[in-house]
Amino acid sequence: MPADPRYLRACLKTHGDFGLAPPRALRPSCFFKMFKSLYLVFLLTSARLVLAQLNIVAQSAGKLYLGSATDNPELTDSAYVAILSNISEFGQITPGNSMKWDATEPSQGVFDFTGGQQIVDLAQGNGQIIRGHNCVWYNQLPSWVSAGTFTVAELTSIVETHCGTIVGHWAGQINDDGTWRSDVFYDTLGTDFVPIALNAARAADPTTKLYINDYNIESEGAKATSMMNLVQQLKADDVPLDAIGLQSHFIVGEIPTTFQSIMQQFSALGVEVAITELDIRMTLPSTDALLSQQETDYENVIAACNAVGGCIGVTIWDYTDKYSWVPSTFSGQGAACPWDENLVKKPAYSGIIAGFE
Image 1: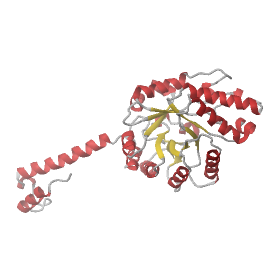
Image 2 (image 1 turned 120 degrees about the vertical axis):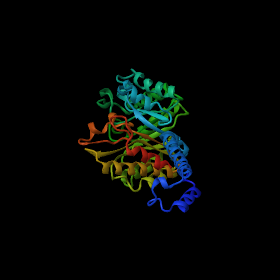
Image 3 (image 1 turned 120 degrees about the horizontal axis):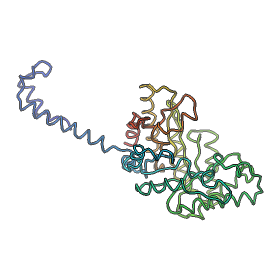
Image 4 (image 1 turned 45 degrees about the vertical axis):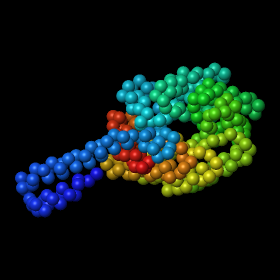
């Protein structure tokens, strides 16, 4: 709300140009009225900044959530947990590792839900959605799976048991996802392991949303095309599949220009889409220029989701640089998250807000 122009005109008419008239030449009433108007502007702007929290803005834009990944070791950090638990910032939580195969079935037929349940309990206590991660993946497998030599029937039973048990344990509480490549599953079962996993998950919980979640499908290319072909084939075969997750581990200044188009193409196949593991890394050390570009990149990624009706939400892969996976995976790179290592919001936070607005 601008200062009332009537007061500006009255003061200018009486005392001339503000740049030339000394302050004492202005009527006190003019100063008071102008200050009151400008003060209200400041209050309204400040209130808007306070209210502009990530999950609130995402839901106001029609999305289901803005979420964050987390992991069990960091849940001892009370300051971190306080922000993670703020439902105005995060409406969803994804366990980074504690629902993966090595954590949940370290020995065949021996299941451990402890780590995953800790995060489920946290989210439920906060009124947040839990996103399951994951049912089947080529990585983080216990050796009894990755080094196993199985018949088709044996591995089919193993996959069905694992997916059915994991999804069944948290039935009605989570969403689930699966991914595939050349590994023990593909080498033994071919592409059949995908419908085996999805059918087992749907049988265990008919209400959960089933995802295929992958990376490097965010731009035009052979991998995105292959994924679209897989979606069409699964749909034609009546295999349950609800959505595609685009992991979206990006690099500053290198956001795919076809990202929005890719999401639209997946959505047109009759599945939801979600940005499931968003971070945007840079070569360290960070600079003002890199942080500014990162802000723009976050805005553009969020705006792409915002423009696609079938994009239901966004998860950042964790919210703070303090617990980001990037530095330990990509040498010399980091600063990928919207909060820094001291849990202070970076310009990227404003980029997310702007993308939804």
